[in-house]
Structures are given as structure tokens and as C-alpha cells.
Image 1 (cartoon, rainbow, N blue to C red):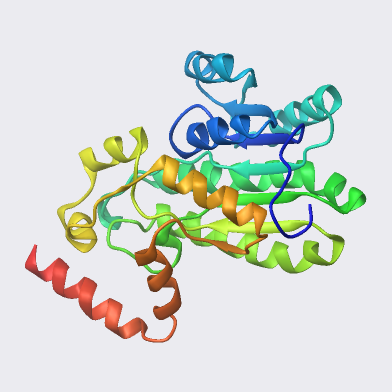
Image 2 (image 1 turned 60 degrees about the vertical axis):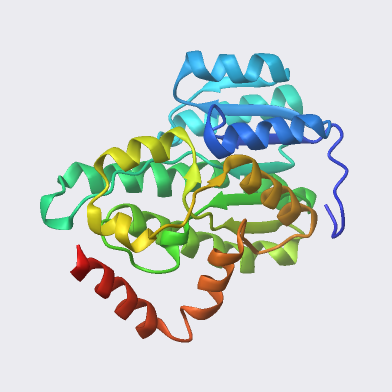
Length: 264
């Protein structure tokens, strides 16, 4: 997969978390481009409802289970050919104050958001390196760029995803494999709707009046990022600006966030 627009026809694309949100929107987009699609998700009924109309293969799988992921992707490669594109979109979030959070919340974030990215990558990367082609995409978050009140569990897991993909890129680029990390802001998905039910007021205040973007907008950005082999993939101007400025002036963001928290 060289630079420039990718010919998606017949390419084997694997999307985890493909039954809703960003994963579902991306599944529809790559199917429209002629790709062969394997979707992984935990909910069998919802997965079948999405995969069926797309002519995709839907496989129920817990992405935090290394053995299950390895077996599922080995079968997918045997039946539909080596994986050309992997998009790790499965994820969970449960915002809350650190002192009120259960220990299990921190374990769950790491198991699903981090290991749920790591295990699929571990399964497909050797073949991509051997064939000197392929694209690996992970979904981080704007919360992987800066610490945010209420995201001590989620943000830590997404920072780990960012670190994994940034380091992995340096190792796989010499072998012709593209690695990209996506940094979406709030996205209008079922997960965000559930998150908003328990999100602390301070977390909402930091977000301010920023309107969530659509899953389709993120999917479009991912396709563009794969076509152009971007290491960092942004779907909106505000998150791109955050990424460009937070490292230069982190104190500005800390003061801004602290001010909004104090108001609450």
C-alpha cells in the first residue's frame, strides 16, 4: 500500500468494534469502496445486524482475550486472505472521579482499550511485515493528548494506545507497513450517550459547548489517513490544534481546565 489513494477493491479489512459507532461507519465506507470485510465485536446480535447487509463476515469476539483474537484473525486470514488493513476501533469508557472509581474500572479500560488494540496488532503485524504491505490503525482519543478531569482510567489507557502506536510506527515503517493513530474528540455514538449519563459535571465543563462530531466524519478521516499514510489522524480542526499546541504551552491548558473545574 504505497502513498496516494488506495485501491480498496478486494482488500481484506478487519475492524474491531465494528458493530456500532466509528467501527460501523467505517465498515460502511470501506464496503462502498469494494473491500472484503471482517468485523469483530462482542454483541453477536448487533454484529449480525450490521455485517449482514454489508456482506461482511461478523465474528463475535472479546478483543481483550488474546487467544480468542489470535484464533479469530488466523481463521479470517485463512478464509479471506491476509489482512491488508486492521482498524482497532473497539473501546469502552467510564468517566468518573479518581477517588470514587472502582479498581475494576481501571482494569477494564486497560483490558479493552489497550490490550484490545495490542492483541489484534500482534496477530496481523508479522504477516504485514513479511509481505511488506499493510496498514494498522488504532483509535486513541483527544484525551490521549492532554489529561482531563474524570478520565484517569480512560485517559491512561488511551495514552498507552498512543504510546504503542507511535513506537510501533518507527519499527514497522522500514518494512513498508503504515501505522496510524486516530485522535477523535467526542463522537456522536451510543458509547458517548452512555458516557454522558455518568460523566462528572467538571468533565462536561471542560468540553464546554463543543458539539460532538459524527462517526461518519471520523470514518472519512481514517480513510484519508490510510490513503495518505498519516501517522496522526484528526477528524476535526480543534483536536488538530490541541495536538499542535499542548506540547508547546501545556500550562495554558492546565489553567483553562482548572478554571472551568473551579466554576463547577
